[in-house]
Image 1 (tube, rainbow, N blue to C red):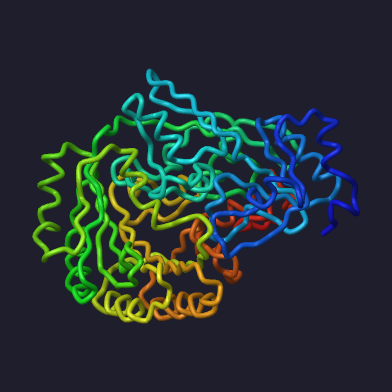
Image 2: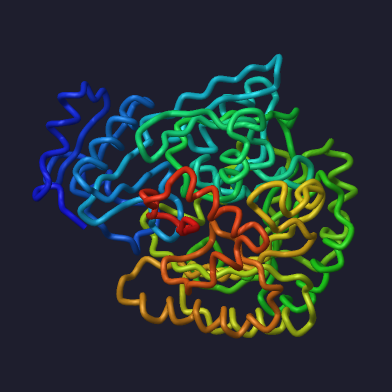
Length: 459
């Protein structure tokens, strides 16, 4: 891949085009902060960071990068664990300055620019008592989460983030800008809903909104690790019959006080009236004596940010994930055994439950195919000491391998790392993979958008 210095100066060309944002090169103030993504394990140095302030900046950057033969990375929120939002020696299109959100309360819709985070989106929509399914960590960007799927607290009632996408403004590989929706370029719109960043730079997203809150019931309840077997079996029973308004994730985790103590816990969310939530929570309240009980009535914006402190920017992360059809006794015991050996002081083993509205969409209606009620298992290794990297990565890999006999075969593309085998995408997209390749061939035949979980265009 050519470097910027060998092919010309993209900065001067962008300045000549009237670039309205901020252009950063190595050694300039703000460059080091801008080049880092959320995962501290990723350390790359773009030749130029184009911090765009509008779609025109994006189109000019794409065209100039193409002319100069430079690799293009696209950063929305920068949260993706694989670190595909940056490049070594290419151009990073940074959307973080593009955070505008316009809410239309009469139509119950919102249009948000591609650099918006869920915290920013929710702040605007909750002014009108509205929301859509967003990430469980509020510092996550709307772009990556939506394009890859969109697991969130409201998915039982309102489906995934991508199920609520109404339209998208997209800059294509040739620098042209188009709209995609059910009525306009429906093939592209289908692919965007799950296909990740393979088809262009989405500069704005239009979402369907729903009445939510402003107060919901949410929080963490945690118990000694010795109770993990009984708690996980109780979790299995509880999730067999959850109402759409309620989400419950289970976790084997470390105490948030930094002591390193291992715990077993549940994170709960209920978007219905508090008295209904209290009844739904009764089976959880009946389980043992918790060490931590942070379940409370709180604003929806607070619930969406309640886990933020557990995933700080700059911490080193390595994840492995698979869907589970069932939580068998053998699977639960394997999880407990794996977590008992976890060396990562911020490591977790999480179980995300999918039910309700997310399962009432056909697998081929969107590019995201995982529409069966069940569970997503995430081995999340997180640490801050570089010296612990080898041990923490090895634990995640070994645990994932130990849990594979219990996996159902599906993968969540937003949780795929940067070292997955060739079959990972076929597993992630299942029956939709070939159609995604066809759409890729139509809109990006030269595979310009390859710094992602890359779908190869069909020849």
